[in-house]
Image (cartoon, rainbow, N blue to C red; front, side, top):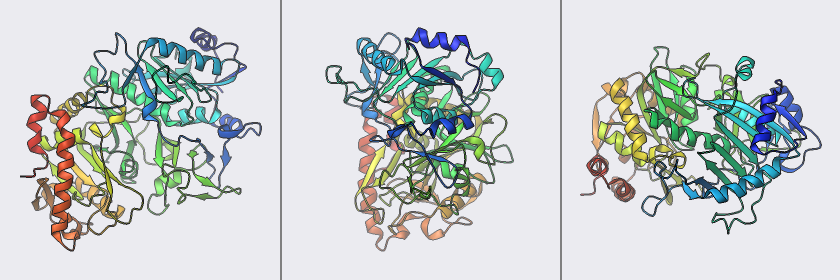
Length: 541
């Protein structure tokens, strides 16, 4: 544990936390391990040992973020800058008032006062000139472990000069707001932001991801206004110094595909792109573990060891893990410090400018080709569309796919209008000659998911430039340019029509999906830029 300075104690008092029983400041991993296994802990505060050395925790009712419970104070700072939800473009940026904020902040302060608290000071952002200094105040040791894993850990010297934080996160998981209806909220649960006070408060949910994604939303607010692209993507760099970035929603393979033994990992989820290059926001990784297989994903599997923290994974009384059990949630997770991956960029998680930009989609309609090269206009269109799809229930067929359109492949975390992120990304791509590709990691006409071996082969061919030299043809409806043959990839899957017994079935599905794309994109046609991009999308005529 780092030495608790008077300034930290004073800071808590100034916030309004009264008479803390004990303050544990930036505990080491060994100390966290002991605190988390304290036999006096009960309920969701408890952690459990597993056979791999990592601890496992359960997060209760909330095994994922609760976007309906996210609110931001609408005031002079935010009223004209935030991308507020509207009937035409509904999103998660719901406004609340200063008065409601004051009441809920007081509830959280009362919850944290008189308690044993864990205070973690950390950085969000690998670049010193743009990173945020974050102070996390929690009452649950595993939540301190979570943010220690996920954010950038300051050195002892950096902690001595840390000073006042840029942003404070107070997590009162056991706080309950009985007056939520009067406050105009969705439920007794809340995760709320005040950009004037530069603070996030959390109540009623134990899910650690609210802290991680909350700070991503704040980076998404600050950086683009400084001309820096803020991206929901993973990134890695080759031995030749060339950087690749992978956009994608949960379950599309963002973490898996960027964790490559032949390339150094920059980070798996959140990055910025400035005048120097691509840099990580985080100091760790947050990987899905459902059906995790050591053979298929050895780097992630081997990262699950002492200091890693599993969430909602099924573990028996002897510590044996069942990664195939999704009975609690399909969103089983693990956090681990980034250095648990052997091949990472050191000592700082950043590299040069990207030359390959990959959009990952898991298409359950069985329509999209496994790889296509995008024109600049298609790049803008598909970035704003942010398409993926999920199967409702079983994954053995594609009979009832559910489409998801998430602007910039991360709509839930956007605090500015999506076109701002598109503008910054395309500007960086044009400046540095980067090319974009759409990669489908989902399903085709076989009813089976495209194999990870084929997808890895596709990524390898993108990164070594082979896909740019291959013979191509145009897939109708979506007008996507696809290769006819690639090394280490089964050629018969490259044209999705070839995976159907009757190609007319693909055509029917393609037209249905194209209609969904067109309907979604209508919300971006309120200006000339959006109208001009319609032609880059699928065409039904």
